[in-house]
Length: 391
Image (cartoon, rainbow, N blue to C red; front, side, top):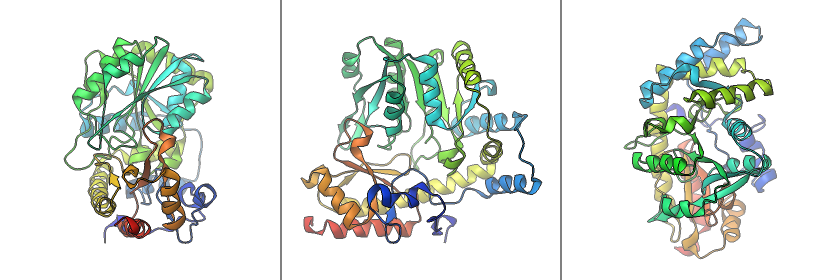
């Protein structure tokens, strides 16, 4: 049995994924499956736990200082894992990447400005944009033979000149696409044509299926850095979402100075626990754990796809990255509420609902596969049972 097969009871631990699903979806934890919010049911690598235990053993939890090891770990990780030789002086630590997006909106845009999203996309982007008094501008992805693609001619026609920023999710959540170098270059050129600050959220960069390779946006175009803000984090990669710490990486000197002023004005500083845990994660031991994790997730993907795609009318999007399966229910002929009745009430599986991801998500549900394989097998069997009348 691999370490990822261990079923850890998270109920009653203030866990959003398991303790909140009955309130939100009507799925009881007693016999339900939590396949919604994007964290994993796996322990992090031992090096992370050891770093935290070292802090506990020391017993003093004062202000964090001297971030050289933390910054060096970020530099080492991005260069060895992704081929990007970033300068540690470009890195800011924010309270997670949703906070990082909010900080970018506050720094580089004004109320009423348009912010472009390629939809469907991670639902927190639109929520933060709207809460900041900015305007979401949707550029719908094209669904081509079950795979998302970009149509920049169509997107150019949607621009009004009032847009100031574009946010890219790379790899894509919820569709699991690993964007090609050509597609990423197209995004960079689109941002340049319309004079947009380009935010590239690459939080899923380490969770790539075998046979695919993530390309950092910073490497696709010699000129992109003049308008680019890169984002990455240990939180998604190593199941550390609760530490709420992300890397906002800004190569351009002027953009970096503007962001630094906003950070200072907000009085933001690092979380000591997060800094120690992130430093430990970005290490050779962490890299070996990620390799094992991706192989395991690929196995979960295969099991889930086989079960789902055997149900007439259901189709899971080919998963190239992330651990989030995006399943199309349109072929069933059912309205989404009817499909949800079967998935949530009858199969007792809590999932993310497609419409929350914006235009294009209307007939999709998102399933989190980062859980022990026995649960993935169980989910497939439950879905086949509640849709048995289609077979």
